[in-house]
Amino acid sequence: MKSETRNVLLQAYAQLQEIIDKLYEAHDRAIANNDFDDASLLASRADRLYEEAENLEIVISEQEQR
Image 1 (cartoon, rainbow, N blue to C red):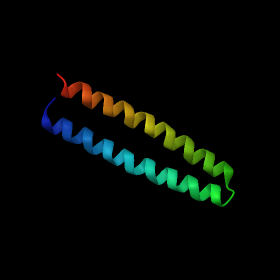
Image 2 (cartoon, rainbow, N blue to C red):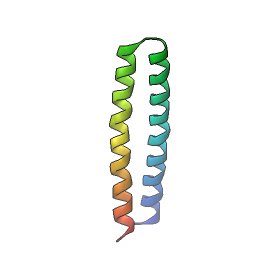
Image 3 (cartoon, helix red, strand yellow):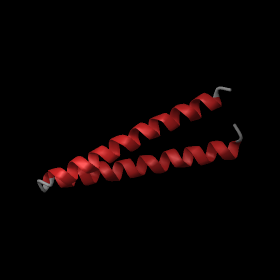
Image 4 (cartoon, rainbow, N blue to C red):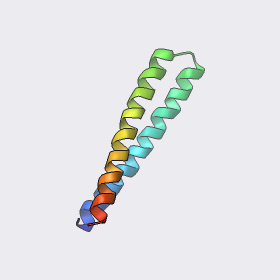
């Protein structure tokens, strides 16, 4: 994998992690405010992005081993 591709993928991974953190923080605030529907939505989106970030990390790792 070319270094530019690797750098872009790593940057995307880092940005996903930031978004995930913000979603979980918003989830916690929604729970504190008894906004359970919003909390569920926020957690669901965060979980989905977390899975995508894990998959991206696997792709990066596999490509680096080549």
